[in-house]
Length: 199
Image 1: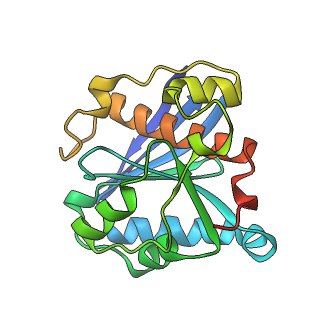
Image 2: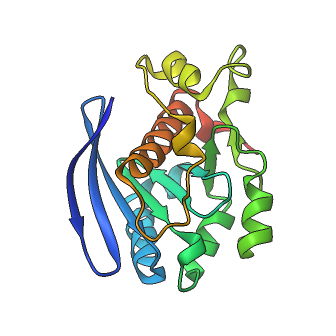
């Protein structure tokens, strides 16, 4: 179960604290390139040791029309409103292209092409579809994969996934959906040893 425990609104972004199965996740929602730049810089700084020794594992997801990009590292998630962005910061371009990051998520084989065609964002490789990392996952729903890997049940409503992600102010349900999907993808990737893969 996911709930919003706290929220703060600022002129160019909003911060939410989302509780998922007892863990608090910090979620930043923004269309501002400067806020994204700061989020990336902080993420790279926090993960510097992993970047030196291994690879940084990053969950990457989007809404179906690629109006928003969802990233999650550790207990920090970003919802970048790409379709409303003033510009795309150079360090985000470097981040998604980096061979030192391992990107994973659910049902995401078209994400790389969508980011390129709509926003000129180039990924070094396709993000890994986590369904392919373990026998028996490929035919499961996202909720089924999460239960199989993490042992708890989530409710990812289709009407939220296919809702309007181009609106200026995302709904609480959209924030919860994006956070839940990306945070669980990250932890499924950890469970499935995504960072060990050499793709």
